[in-house]
Length: 97
Image (tube, rainbow, N blue to C red; front, top):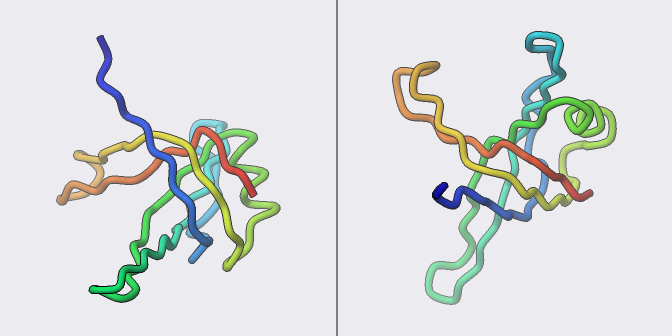
């Protein structure tokens, strides 16, 4: 049995990090700002790196701009060997504009 690795998150595009091709596959990375409000803590903003591939990456690169609201469905990915620290990003399987 596979463990569940699923994420659904909404927020606004905070920053587009870049668009490039990795092994012939398009990749677009962006930062999603997700705000949370509570009476006791006030406003809290979390930033998440979102990674898209293929046709979805091309569409995100073309159509997304900073400040646009989106919903992302995907999975968590940890990059243990790319950085000296454990970095977690969200690999998007679907992006709703």
